[in-house]
Amino acid sequence: MNIYIDTEFNDFGGEMISLGMVDETGRDFYAVLNCQDPSPWVAANVIPVLGQPYASLRMLQQRLQAWLSAYRTVHIVADWPEDIAHFCRALITGPGMRLDTPPLTLEVRRDLNSEASAIPHNALEDARAIWSSAQKTTTEEGRP
Image (cartoon, rainbow, N blue to C red; front, side, top):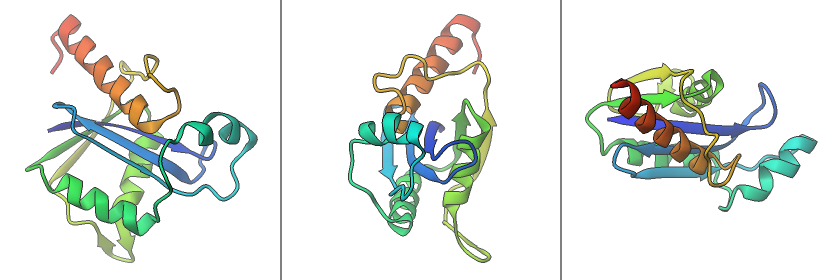
């Protein structure tokens, strides 16, 4: 199953603040982590549109594992490499330990974007826009 993802994070290279995911059927996942010291830009543009209470990293991981368990295989698609990096870090639960997930593959596609997001900088709405962008690209170019 293709799953389109987006993350928000505390400036370039900063900690993940939220993770949004949507599959080809529209089934979604969204989780928000507490950002202790947001940059001014993040405080003005990301924090106000999170739209959900904070979860601990452990709670995010438990929910993510349960959500991903519905699939036999997962192909993660993002429009930005740092989204993939944050997703992969969320899979790690401790030294030598990780979430129990179905087989995963990862893809970064430069032809996708979240420009049509209903709520820019909300990771779930941005993931939905990336999914929509992929559908449009597939329709126009016949790309799988």
